[in-house]
Length: 251
Image (cartoon, rainbow, N blue to C red; front, side, top):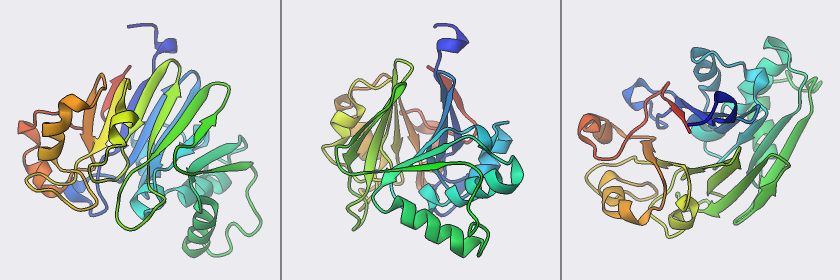
């Protein structure tokens, strides 16, 4: 293992589902690497998750959103609110996500805090909207997307972040699809949702399917998240590692 400066540090800010099963915060994962800070998904409880772990919301450089469901992107207006009135952010914020991200964020922010953002904020917001098989290339990192299957929306993606010589893959919310194989391939960490336990679930993955398919997923380490109540009941007996809020992984 290299020096801390060369490590990627992954912190689970929220491992919960939309229903708050297990009292967990909503989907949000912090990645620190190469002097940069990323969030994978940004559920509505993001500020609580950041503050529990001692992170400043104003220090987040880039937020990557898998799909436009509230428990995955609904925390962005709170980041903006904190940037405007809390830590009084000045640094640019990059938001990467499906087409319609900017419109959805602006509409939600207006509903949650009417008039608050009408005068704007004191920091640049850079929206990058992606589609299937998009590659966002920056000097120090790359984000790649794969279409997955979650309900009726076509704008639902698994995402893959390559930074500081490491690869983090994230399923977002999805049932089993073939695109999970290239998404996970060669990754150092694959974060995969596991909503169900005994039975196949429409729009979501389940533990039995993932256990049966585990050998097909070419990743160094796989961790389960977004667990439903039945999975949580069996968490101590799972044969695949699972995440809890606050877990930290050094890569």
